[in-house]
Structures are given as structure tokens and as C-alpha cells.
Image (cartoon, rainbow, N blue to C red; front, side, top):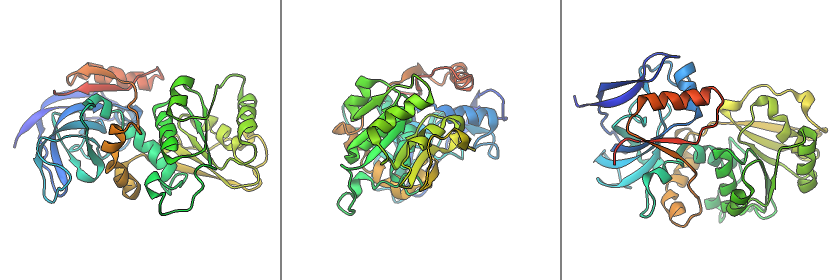
Length: 350
């Protein structure tokens, strides 16, 4: 059996450690093997290392779901790719074969895309986890269920007349949420937090800051949306702050708030401003392509074009050379300790 270098978690709460005795996975049906070029980390990787999220029953495990690489072997029935193609993909959450912090991995054809000329692998690696979380939050029935842009010819939805509130415009998921809303043609995109210049360039129509406390924030939002808001995406708050999105929703129309499943939990309804006479729905979203293939596959089929025509713009990142285990643990520690982290990508190979 071929062996490779990988970084592994062997016990919940332990440190990530290197090994040179890890098996090289082989592709199965509609899968490709890649030589990993870039591996990206996100907050859920810290939760995996420290609490066993998604991996506790599959130890030892490898982390990283943002992955790019060059195809080295094509499995049965693959039609989108060939050997030598440069691709970006979101790996599965469970199982070591698809994870990023190793020299060779396999990915599923349905949830991968070619990287177009003019874009480096690091640009593309900003997409998988954060873009898919926003994608599913906005367009999947498990989220806000706004019809996806590629469905425009099949549905009668008033995109131009719709309003979306995004809380956490400075977060990576929030940034992609704004870009997707613009792509869909949503007429009013109201964002709390983030860079005004950046968000306006991506399509936000109103950018609000968070100073002055909850009541002031809600008033700013309500001054723009009135009593008509039915779509809100909270990309950043934990349950103790999610009353803001609920408070901004219409009192006379049933609204929805999409939140990331990692931020789900009970909400203190006594903090909600105003009566919600028509009620509201909280939607807990898992931003995983494999869990929502009907929404994710059409997106991955279009990623190459979205990059090429700049419908979606890569986000900021920092680069670390090699499978640097000390730096991996340092980044995960920063997530654990609540410190600011620019998405960190590991250049596994060239």
C-alpha cells in the first residue's frame, strides 16, 4: 500500500500530529484522486480537534474541507475531469480520504470544479466551506428557500422586490451571502457589519454598523425594511445575539432566519423587540455540499464560470508553506481562543 505524509487527530482534545505512514486513498465511482496543492482551515476544524465534532467516531482523522489539487487518477464514470486538471472541491465532513491536510486525497466529481486560468489555487480555496454555507443558507429549502439564480427561468419570484438582511457582513460566510444575493438579483441587500467599500462593491445596498446597542441597530434596520422583512441570514451571531435578526423580521408576515448549525441553540425570546404576530422560523443550516446535493451540484457545475466572469470574488487569506503542524495547531488555537483569524491556507505542493 502506498504511504504519504498527513497531519492527523488521534484523540479528541489532543494536538494535531504528523505521520509519514498514512495510506494514499484511491478513487471510487465518480471520484478523482488529487495531489493536494492547497488545504484551508475553518472554525469547525477547531471544534473537530477539540470536541470531536464530526470525527469522534472515526479517529484517527484528518482535518480540512477546503481543498484544491491536480488530478492524478480518475475513477470510474467520471465525465467532468481528466488527469492533470486543476480543481477545487469541498470534501466530506467524515472519513479521512477526502480531507485536505495530506499529500493525496480523493474528492467527488459532483462537488468539484475546474480552476480557470488567471486564478491561483489559493483564490479558489476561499470558496468551498464559506461559499457553500452561504449558498445553502440562501437558496436551499432547509434555509431561506429563495430560488437559486439558475432557477430564474423556472420560477415566478420577485427577486427585485425582495429584501435580504445579512448579519455579519465582515465574516466570510456573510461576504459570500452578499455576493450570492447580488447574483440572484435581490433588490435590497441590508448588511450589518463589515467593510462598506467592500460590501457595496459586491452588491450591498445598505451597510449598517453595530454601535449603539441592540435597540439602535434594530431601529436602523427597521428604518430601511419597514415591516416587510421575511428573509434574514445570521452569519456570525451565537444564540445570545440571534434575537437581532428575529427582531428585524416583519410582525405581520411570517419570516425566516437562517443560521449556521454550529451556532444553533435556544434563543432568549425575552430579548426580541416587537411582537411577531405572524410567527417566524429558525432554519439551522449545515453548509455541506454532500448533504444538499440538489442545491450544491448545480453550483459546483457553475463555479468555473462564476470565477471567470467575477460573479463571485475570492476572499482574503494567509499562506503557510507545507504541512506545518505547529502552524496548524496555532491557527486552531486562535479559533479556540476567539482571536481574529484570516483564513489560513497551507500550500501542500506546487
